[in-house]
Length: 361
Image 1 (tube, rainbow, N blue to C red):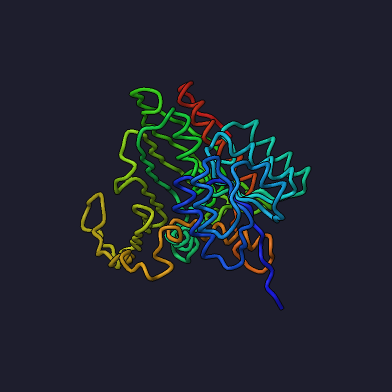
Image 2 (tube, rainbow, N blue to C red):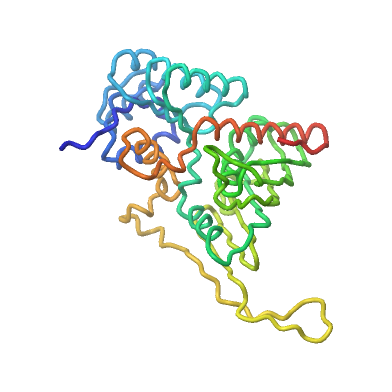
């Protein structure tokens, strides 16, 4: 029997799409790219050559010409929602890079269009499929980790066109990751330092969990209790330098940390604790930490490639699984509701910055 394959129309051939998304498509043997589109003729032709498909410079022309099952949209954040709606109206399922939309009314229009077309929209929150964050999830769920009491994350990037871009486009990854691990955001309180619009540092205190996500399921680390979160978000750092992304979760004398979205360390409870006299703290005999620092020069290994380590391959594979129905990866696939929830979190943080008050979600 011939295995089912997904006929995919590709919109976008910019730097991110070319270096990250297209390689993930090439390595997926269940995808047939049937068309490539970019407003820039040279980029469209290059993508067409790499993906062995005809080139187009207008999405409407491609959608009316090729026979596709689904589309992938990788464009400027502020136009992705309109392109997604155009693909839905053409009868296609859609995988769109994050964010689903930059405005809430846009996101709701996408949701309405998907419902009308009876088609699926998935969002590129690839951190769910990043191997180190999947390891973090595994640690949280393990026996003896304890309730995840504190989640701390740092997202530091370079200058942004405007401050809302830091929250609605960049940091939105962290909002989805935290929600996936611990359950929905319940309340946020943010303070900030702003050099000028687009150059800002924001400190966020938040509570998560204690409620359900999609289909009645709790977040993977949630048992009905709340998790406290401390988020540091900044566009006053260096996008290209190490330390741009850090995340850490604390359980019961368990600390699991992820550095640079690549390397992880799991410090488990001490071998022994000893109370000495009337001291305030107990002396600990530490347990050796578990850690993973792979050899990233071993580029012949598929799982050492950037698009796999970042989670893009897994996220797109889950999208394929969800449509072809012969895999389990679709269980964690981010959908419209996840895109809207992350955007609502970003907007709530903006409101807290503006008002100086905590905001409930």
